[in-house]
Length: 167
Image 1 (cartoon, rainbow, N blue to C red):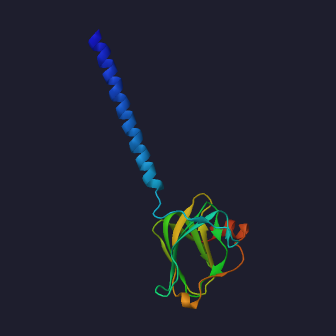
Image 2: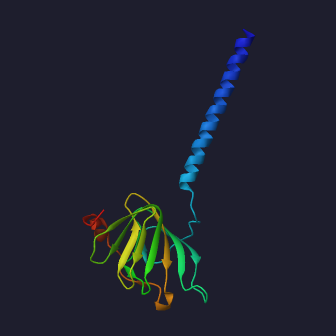
Image 3: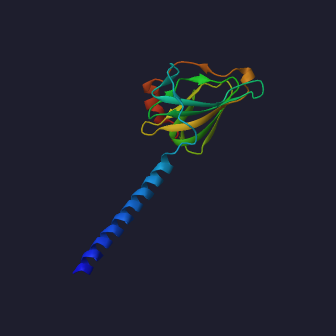
């Protein structure tokens, strides 16, 4: 009887250890999924975006580097205004699902790992999909030509009708 009692306690102890181990493994996997490559940055408070957006600058133009590089995180439905870059722009999507559209063209669906080359002086917008956040690294080259010219917001109607383009 005493042996059975100890056996039961030992079995419960082993079961508890296994359950804790499984929970820790699940937590570690979840933490890896949500890990950011770079800090989220500062919440944008200007009128050049719709929705919640954060920016973390990594490189600012200076006398040595004629470029800017920053991570931009868009919450679902968040997006830039229409804008263009005199020197062009390159976007490297690092997380989530988003959209990119040049004026007069169909919307492009963006996935993690996609690279977008925004040609110089072409009006465009980019941002998250309705149901997913999106993070990209934005590279502004050729800053001697200028950085960005902000235009009007992308209306909800323009954003909602984006599905008429290629997805």
